[in-house]
Image (tube, rainbow, N blue to C red):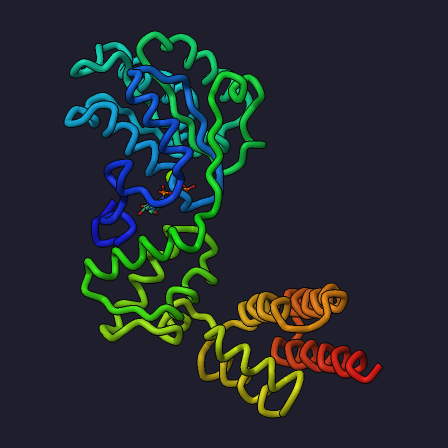
Length: 322
Ligand SMILES: Nc1ncnc2c1ncn2[C@@H]1O[C@H](COP(=O)(O)OP(=O)(O)OP(=O)(O)O)[C@@H](O)[C@H]1O
Ligand SMILES: [Mg+2]
């Protein structure tokens, strides 16, 4: 993929460059050290380092010969299991280049294969086990059949923690000569929730303004409301000037071009972080969920948002006076 994308340009090439994932690194390093490894299954949400780790492992195992010894396939691109079988057969026919004891097949999107195809895959894995190892990549472990699960060492990837994402974004920003505020980093994390690909993308898009990246630039680049502004608006809506809050929200939609559903989602996030008694939070969540549903069914977005805010205001007031 094009190096124009920062997430590709800055895809780690060694274990040292990979942030977080200490346990995974330790296990994979052990495979490299011992020169042997089982079949692996990496699973977890998008942008959490699965493909990156598979490629880093290939580089660490084979050094300069990593390309020759690695076959990358995509289970959903390739037309069916027969293509996979043919390509693995062809690839496994020749001995590994260099001193490596085995070659590596990386099969992406394995959870998109039908269970029949996975049964066939299992046999292919066994047939070539002598000189190949498979790394299967998947988003959902539930999409992988039991017999394959039991023949692989499963490694789970989770959304990356905030500090890890911050460290990587700071590194990239420095390298690109881009200035970014701590608030902006917070906002990126808030919007991307541990998906490093989306976080790096957000940074790149926000950087196109050419100025220092702030919370506002990030929100604008991603078509969202600045979390700080939204918090101020909520404060107005619930504790102060409701009309002012409504005007703000009208501005987000009409001037800012931000979708009402997006606003509802952000509202949900911010409202649950409000400093209100815990027992009220389910009620607040429910009110917002109703507005979301109504908008999906075709109700007028702004009306629904104002209505939800009014209901929450009432709820908070009511309890404040009892
Ligand atoms: N731990 C990490 N350290 C540094 N960069 C990372 C890390 N994890 C992910 N990245 C960055 O995020 C990008 C996306 O990661 P990767 O392609 O590994 O995700 P993935 O888990 O394979 O996602 P998907 O399920 O969507 O295929 C990489 O190109 C890399 O730039
Ligand atoms: Mg991937």
